[in-house]
Image (cartoon, rainbow, N blue to C red; front, side):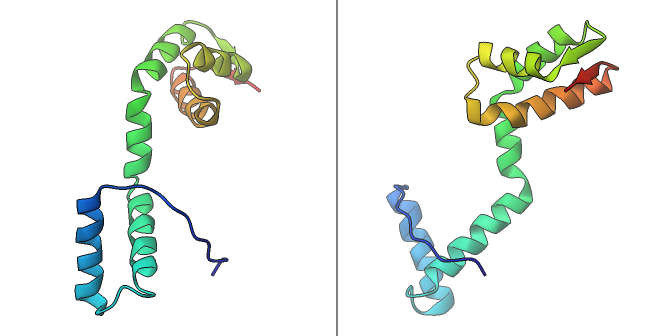
Length: 115
């Protein structure tokens, strides 16, 4: 197991209350168990793929427009895909993942990607 770290986030008060009640019902105590249950919930959420789907839905319009524009060409540079994402004001931290999605779509349309 990796090193344990603490962090602080603000979440809906009612949701937190319900989560604490769930942990209390299941374990009889919050101490030591709330972190275990939160870790389990986060792992289950990430394994379900819901986070990725939400991410992709958020940028679906931009990805579609970029793919439509670039698919008219036979070759596209990876840097050009990143520039297109930048034009659509996609945050820098999201560009590599979206570039992968764009590249997959372009590849499916027969476009060669040059790295």
